Every structure is written in structure tokens, then in C-alpha cells.
Amino acid sequence: MKPDKNNKRISKFLSLVLRHQPEKLHLEMDENGWVSVEDLISKMNKYQYKIDLSLLENVVATNDKKRFSFNTDKTKIRANQGHSIKINLGYEVKTPPLKLFHGTASKFTNSIYKEGLKKKNRHHVHLSKDIETAKKVGRRHGKLVVFELDTTKMVAENIQFFESENGVWLTDEVPVKFLQEIIRE
Image 1 (cartoon, one colour):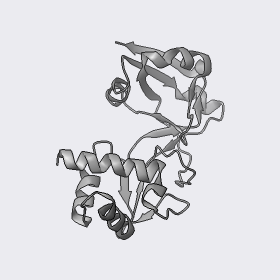
Image 2 (cartoon, one colour):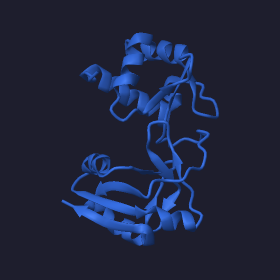
Image 3 (cartoon, one colour):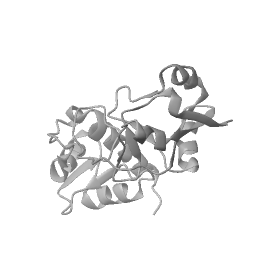
């Protein structure tokens, strides 16, 4: 299934309210980021989006980054990662793959070389398990740079990793000493 323009518009709005501004729809979000599907649909319809459960299921299924998840009975929905609001997604510490990658734009590399990768206003730094995904992420922001992380040394220094439901690897920060630039376009 490929998303259409309406799905993308709805997906962007879902990202806004489920990751950053639930108050925009006066949504009640629990400590783990879940909101009631019924409440979300009702409030989206009152706001400016005509949506029902079938369309919401389609938006979730066709989102190329798999940003959203339903609970098992589809009564609740949440964003999988990328929140700027305080929530507990319940991630457990996991051993990462031997290599992880971070795609960014060249305009950010000066600060990265000074400070490493910082989560800034998000819960975690987002990392990819493959170069192609890192390239897609990095190209969204400008001229591409991809860093490879030395995860073995990071784990040896007790840096923790988590994996979101949609396969994005997460950590609190990546110090400069663990970064190697491997692609610059």
C-alpha cells in the first residue's frame, strides 16, 4: 500500500499531535504516549480532518517510517518515537547491531564535531541500522553526511541503546569519539 496525499497530510498532523502537541486537539495522553483512538478520531473530525477508523488504519499501515502503532485491540494509538514531550515509551535496553548510522545534513557537522550527536528537544538520538535509511533521513535536511557509530566501544563504556517498535535505534547521545564520517555528498 502506498500513501496518497491525504494520508500524508493526516500523517503529518498525527506526528504533530502524537509526538509534540497533544494539546492542539485537547487529547489526553497517558504516561506511555497512548491516546484513545475514539477520542482522536472525534477531535480530528471536529478540527479539520475527516477521518474514521478505516482511514486511520490505512494511514498507520502506509506510513513509510512506521511512525505509529495501535495497541492490540486498536483502542489506543501512539507515535513510536521522536517525541519532544515527556513520556515513557517503555523501551528496554538492547544490544545494538555492530554498526549503526546517522544521516544528517552537512550544515550540522560543525556542531556534531564539537558536541557529538545530541538529542536536543527529543527523547533520544535516532540511529539507522542501514546506510540507505540514514541517507534518506539526512537528505531531508540538505547536503548529505552519514556517520557510522562504533557501537561496540559505546556499549563497553556503558552507553545504552533502545530499539523502537518500528526499528529505529535510539540512545541518549553519541560522543564525537564514536563517530566516523563515511559519506559526504
